[in-house]
Image (cartoon, rainbow, N blue to C red; front, side):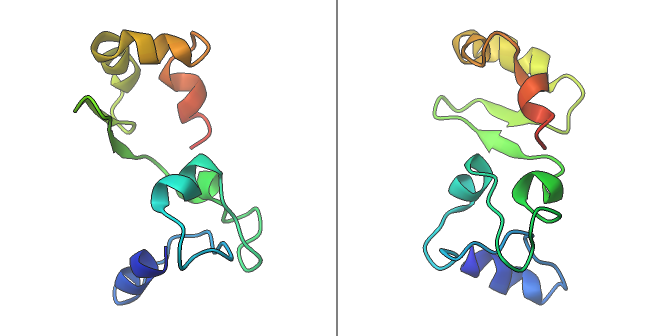
Length: 97
């Protein structure tokens, strides 16, 4: 986190959450836990500041949640993963973003 925000600083940007573990945490952990922090509160937690994501799965499948057909693509490329999300696919997950 700290490395990401130090690189974004020169562009006048910042990744919203500021967890106390910023020196050691990873972006994946921040997103998975909907991290927040004392300076950002819930208004700038991960789900409120992340509009979309491009995710590369271990299989090599790339999911771009900003694409309108992302759910269909995930269902076709990774049916087992899609169904493990309680049978709801990407929309239920993407609503958190």
